[in-house]
Image 1: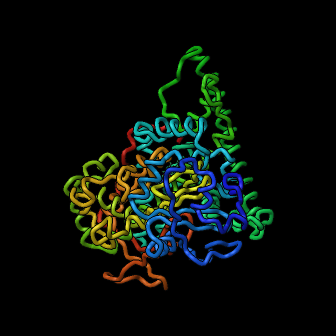
Image 2 (image 1 turned 90 degrees about the vertical axis):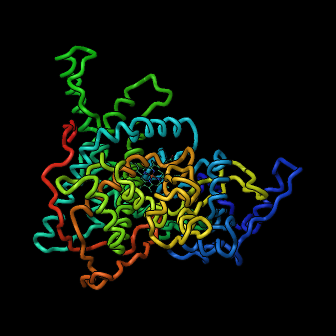
Image 3 (image 1 turned 180 degrees about the vertical axis):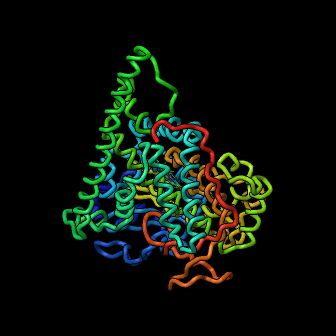
Amino acid sequence: MISDSVPLVGTVVMNLSFSSLASDSYSNPTTTTTSLPCPQPQLPIIGHMHLLGPTIHQSLHRLSLRYGPFFSLRFGSVPCVVASTPHFAKQLLQTNELSFISRIQSAAIKRLTYDSSLAFAPYGPYWKFIKKLCMNDLLGARTVNNFRHVRAQEYIRLLRLLAHKSEVGEAVNLTEELLKLTNNVISRMMLGQAEEARDVVREVTKIFGEYNVSDFIWVFKKFDLQGLGKRIESIFERFDTLVERIMNEREQVRKIRKNKENGELGENGKIDDEIKDFLDVLLDYTEDESLEIKITRTHIKALIMDFFTAGTDTTAIATEWALVELINRPNVLEKARHEIDKIVGMSRLVEESDVPSLPYIQAIVKETLRLHPPVPLVTRRCVEQCKIENYVIPANTLLLVNVWAIGRDPNNWESPMDFRPERFLNSNEGGGPLDVRGQHFQLLPFGSGRRICPGITLAMLQVPALLAAIIQCFDFQVVGPKGEKLSPGDTVPMEERPGLTAPRAKDLVCFPVTRYSPPQTMGQSKAHSAI
Ligand code: HEM
């Protein structure tokens, strides 16, 4: 329930403006406050929910055109502020970072992340410990590099499937295949195995994106009006049983391995320097009594859930948007291929190690993330009353930074609706070379500050490498909404599907046409212990 993080303020408070709520208790009497703009009408019980369409970031963008770059709303009983400019994004995510350092949890998130998730944990010792572990150990550059061969195998698997489809003249659902690939990558990096978790993870990400009336409207909080509670329990049971089994099996293997090590090499010996997957690293932590935070099996399950839900959909969505932009723009595709041909040639496949030498491909990925951020709204919770310019924001207000709107704002970008990767090669636009690491507030696909996405390094290697390998090997004939082959020059539809993430509305189904046959192997130099 959101009620754990946001007291369900209810109708009594619903009609109080943000400044009047604050003026009772704000501690600096020498400054004046102004009311935040607030759309009207605000209805009893539902607040402003009647103003929101299915794609919330688009509705909020439309409201920002009328009510300005920083305005307030109520989602049912939950007070909310919306920021739609780099200026306010910086104020909220950097200048006043500690006031907006936590997140709000829905009932689904709370249950399915064991109430111990990194992504949703309140800012405190546990979150700090796990975040450091992720940034340094699990998703740091060295570990990401160690698993390069796993990703290469998954890229090759997809490319071979596309080559086969091309040979037999069959269509392929690329949306599904990209999701399969990102799922396999995360699953193999974490658990040393692929496949099994995919279905249940898909259901988890789906239910996270569904709107639950009981989360937002306090009078319904005790009722499971949509039957979501039952679904949440059923998904939880499936995920928990699966991960418990994988963990039990791994513990058995670790016992055998330990006995072997002790027998063959003595107490502190090691059998070899094999690469550990995340599960092994985390199980090591559960046995370490010296840590300031005791890591439990529940923490491990929560982190596995975090990585599956945060790291699979997002990466697949970004790759698909980039590919569709290229299919719709033959001139950009041509330039991208020219770069690949020049740097990599036609005698081998693009690899992740080529990415730093492919600036145009990297620019395509940044341009894609500008126009199609897979997470369109960076969502935080105000943990203490604070003042942003003249506006007082009460504790427990939900903050939404509309990254999608910021990326399309003509005040931030020249001809924002043009897909023009060159803008990232030209250091003038945006005042210098722009990156996606949270320091340039006109481009925040991974968020910013302490809560920034820990998967950036992985994503910014995987998306360009995979995209480059796909366009190196294939052209695509896209299948239209009625099952017809789109002709060259027809545009692939760009509508978005509603939800927490912003994928394309319709799956990308197409006939691949081979231009360069993927070889049998790629980057498989390192044997991985857990495969
Ligand atoms: C293109 C791919 C991705 C995009 C666009 C993306 C985007 C984001 C965004 C916008 C946030 C919120 C940041 C904030 O509040 O400031 C986030 C958080 C997070 N992401 Fe990603 N992400 C991607 C890939 C990944 C991957 C590959 C992983 C892990 C394997 C991952 C794990 C996480 C986690 C655990 C958090 C929560 C961090 C925290 O609360 O401290 N993400 N991501």
